[in-house]
Image 1 (cartoon, rainbow, N blue to C red):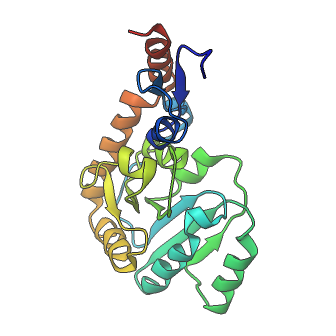
Image 2 (tube, helix red, strand yellow):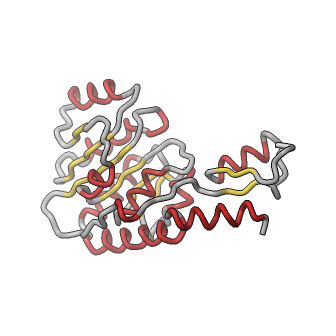
Length: 224
């Protein structure tokens, strides 16, 4: 680091780690979210009144993503005409699938690895991310780019980028009741889903598009 004029971190936790653990000068560390969302790839969801609402989540099946919580919430809402669609792969995939079968969670479907994430997001109504910890959390930004309201945990990049009460609902990552309540509230209020979705997409437009990333990168390396 002694040979660097600027050190770029992709999220605030990383920048804090660089300063606290590695002792880097705060004047050298700049946070530049390496997202570069191409909005043309994401279809904005038009929220409509439907008998059944779809809740989706995307991510690696790892401890951090807190997939057992998805099952807990799905079980609590099993009689509420809410489907849970889960995309991703990883070391916990088989264990989660076994839990779905054992608990007879017919409202939960695992899709495995999904190559076309924008298309997956275009077919859901609410995005759910109950992670235990996160860095930037690119999948939440992708959901916001799709005009989806977010129900998530108040950790890391989720807490920084989702505005609680404006683009989504944030709760402690172990709060089953609040997650279930937040999803139910959005299910029953299509206007709220639409309003949250618009607000979230605007956040992406302002801070996380490829142009915004390029401008922030130029600003950081210029030292201005």
